[in-house]
Image (cartoon, rainbow, N blue to C red; front, side, top):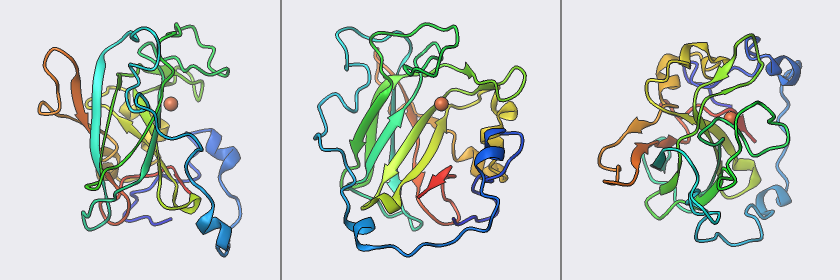
Length: 229
Ligand SMILES: [Fe+2]
């Protein structure tokens, strides 16, 4: 993993308690890549559906909450667009609840919101999702622990070897200083690269607020990634 000036999260960060269990205790060993690593299929068998990138239209009714547009560009270290990259997102609903069996905290589920989406970047590296602004949620990492509102992102390049996972946050969230996941990225400027920017130009009148989140895959301005496979 490249780490320019602390731009990537620490694998072992005791305030984020689950890193105590999963961080490697031995030096990492680089495994040689074999042919199937490079050629195995990356995408699911199902083609992308019309509503895969619009999380507000995946059920019979509209989900509750603040409708938002999240868009950005995937670029390499030199600012060149990265086209044809599968982006998958997942998030909780407006009340802070995931549609997942392990999330049982007392906030309502929304039958019209699953919280999963995907799309492929275009020739200029652009992507765009329509969704609902997620809520904060408690997570028992430490007393009174709450995650700032966030959307999980996974990016696939040409093989499973090139999967990257990160989280996007929203501007000016008061929970940032108390969130060990965000704070596990040592460099403040790198942490700020995880925060989307409100974009009036992306905002659609009478419909949805717009947030821009550009993703830089490598280099000095790299987005912090929690997982590089
Ligand atoms: Fe989450």
